[in-house]
Image 1: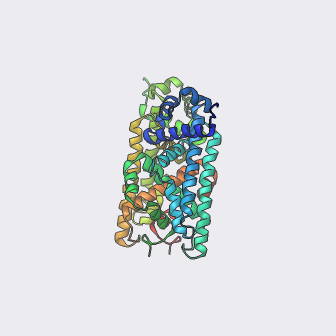
Image 2 (image 1 turned 90 degrees about the vertical axis):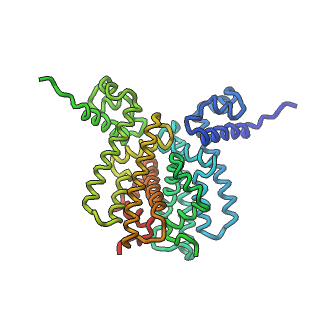
Image 3 (image 1 turned 135 degrees about the vertical axis):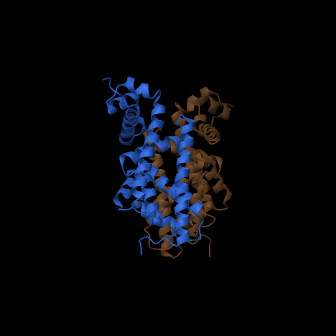
Amino acid sequence: VPKVVDHERRREELADAALRLIARDGMRGVTTRAVAIESGWSTGVLSHYFGTLNDLLLAALRRAAEVQGRVFRERRSQSPEDPVEQLRLIVESMLPLDERRVALTRIFAVYYAELGVNHLAREEVVDYLDNFRRMVERIISRGQSDGAIPRGRDATELAVDLVALADGLSVHATIDPRILGRLQSEARPGERVVREVLGLSPHPA
Amino acid sequence: VPKVVDHERRREELADAALRLIARDGMRGVTTRAVAIESGWSTGVLSHYFGTLNDLLLAALRRAAEVQGRVFRERRSQSPEDPVEQLRLIVESMLPLDERRVALTRIFAVYYAELGVNHLAREEVVDYLDNFRRMVERIISRGQSDGAIPRGRDATELAVDLVALADGLSVHATIDPRILGRLQSEARPGERVVREVLGLSPHPA
C-alpha cells in the first residue's frame, strides 16, 4: 500500500524544529538549512510546506501558542476554583521557563519590533495578548466579587498590567541571564507577580 | 574662512532624523534613502557618518537614551525628596508617550528580538535596563527605610518587576493602539503603576 503522508503532522514537526532552534540559538538560528537539518527533512520538503521562512515562523508561532494553550487548560482544570492559582498558571505559561516558552517569547519580540514580515501575524500577536488580558480580567472580576482578590482597582487595568509585567519579565529574561536566573530560582514566580499586582500579601495567609 | 563642520552636531541630526522615522513609520521606515530625505542631507553624507544602517540605529539608540537621561534628571531635580514621585518620573520616562520614547521602545524591541546586528548594542540595552533597575532599587530602599514605601518585599525584586512592567506596557502600547490610548488617557500613568507594584493605595492619602 502507498504511504499516507500526514501533512499536518509533518508541518508540526517542521514548526517544532524551528522552535527548538529559536530557543537554542535565537532568531538568527532559524535558516532554511538549519531547520532542515534539525527536523531531519530536506530543504526541498521544507519549501514544499513553507514557501518562505516567514511562513515557517508564523507556523511556529501558532504551534507554540497552541501547545501553550493546551498546557494551560490542562493545568487550570486541576485548580478550577482558586483565582490566584489560576492567574499564577497564566503568568507562568508566559514566562520563558522552558524551551517552548523561550522560543515563543523570542518570536513575539520579532513582531514587537514590527519586523515580522507578515502583517497578519502581528494582528495575531495583538489578539493573542488581548485574549490573555480578557481571561485574566474575568478571573480577577470573579475573585473581586467573592472576596479572594482586594477590590478598589479596576479589573481591566489590573489585567493590562499583569499581562504587561509577565511579558516584560519574559522579554528581559530572554536577553539577560540574570533575570532568567532569578525567575528559575523561585518555586512559583507567577504567584509572586500575581500577589504583587493584585495587592495581596507576599505569602499566603 | 572655511566652514567649520560640527561633526558631532551632524551625527545628532542624522540620528534624530532616524528616530523621527522610527516613531512615525516603525522600524521598516528606516532606510538610508528615507533618513537622507528626512534629515535634508545626501545619502553620501549619511554613509560618511554611518557606514551601515546598523551603525545609524546604534547612534539613534544612544541619542534617544541620552536625551531620555537628560529629561529624567531635569525632572527629578524638581522633586528630590518624594520617592513615589521619583519612581513615577522614571516609569514615565520609559512609556512611549511622545515620538522619542516611541522610537526608543521600537529600537529596544529590535534588540529584544536579538536581531540587532551589533552584539555590543545588545549589551548596551541590557546595561541600560540594569541601570534603571539599580536606580529604582536605590529609591525603593530609601523609601522603605523612611517609611514612605511599605516594607516586606525585597527592593531588588520590586525594581526588577517595576522596570519589567513599565517596559512591557511600553512594548504593548507600540503594537496595540488600545493600550497606548489607555496610557494617554491617564494623567499620571507612571504613578498608578508605581503604587500598584509597591502596594500603596491607588490614590494618595
